[in-house]
Amino acid sequence: MSAKSILGLFAATAALLLVGPNAAAQSSPGGWQFTIAPYLVAAAMDGTVGIKGQEVTLDVPFSKIWDNLHFGGMVHFDMKNDRWLLSSDLIYMNLQQSTDVAGGTATVTQTFVEAAGGYRVSREFTVLAGARFVDLGGKLSFTGTNADRSGSQSKSWVDPFVGAQLNVALSERWWFDLHGDIGGFNVGSKLAWQAYADVGYRASDLVSVYLGYRALDMDYESGSGSTLFRYDVLTAGPQIGVAFHF
Image 1 (cartoon, rainbow, N blue to C red):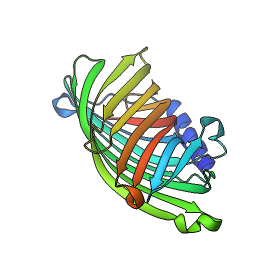
Image 2 (tube, one colour; image 1 turned 90 degrees about the vertical axis):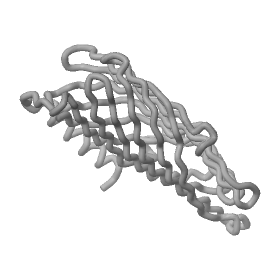
Image 3 (cartoon, rainbow, N blue to C red; image 1 turned 90 degrees about the horizontal axis):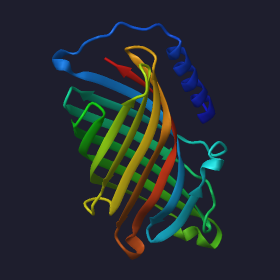
Image 4 (cartoon, rainbow, N blue to C red; image 1 turned 30 degrees about the vertical axis):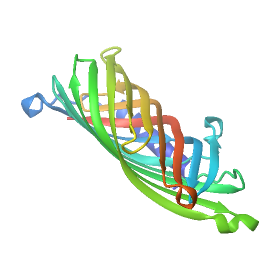
């Protein structure tokens, strides 16, 4: 199934949920509320990838994203009460960009597993701290006289981060969510940051749908010379998701 077909199926599912009947509210033991939210991101890339001392510059702008559409599979889970929040994200992105740059092409796969805890200063504002495990694989391919420079390499690391989240009810049904975090701090990446904004509609007590934009930037480097591995890339694009509350 093509990426565009997946997008159409996802949108159709969201539309059916929007017109579905309201469900009765369910309470959770101890005042905890749980959310699980699968979502998709149409990702563009901008930055530099270096493998075994060879580097290429990636520049696939959002204006070309429909012609170069690649999706990742993502799911978010959180549980919260009046004061505390626990959340996790599992993100997989297969960013197989075939754009020729600097005489070569680059393929990047990313897997992120994120866990965070938060304190709800108010109903709307939460401060966060957590860690993000990154497993990243890269491949550079050259042709002609440069073919012997081709190679692949993979790296894994952990980025601690701190952040904040703002959730504002626009009405009984509509809400706005803003998230930002920064980390790395030379523990894993030199610097890593993530930001996203969503507008959501609560179709029932059990289901919400949301649409927004997400950006993730990482600057990681290890080794030198022929062992250099570098990943300094901004990955960004629109996202759509369905959230189930219980």
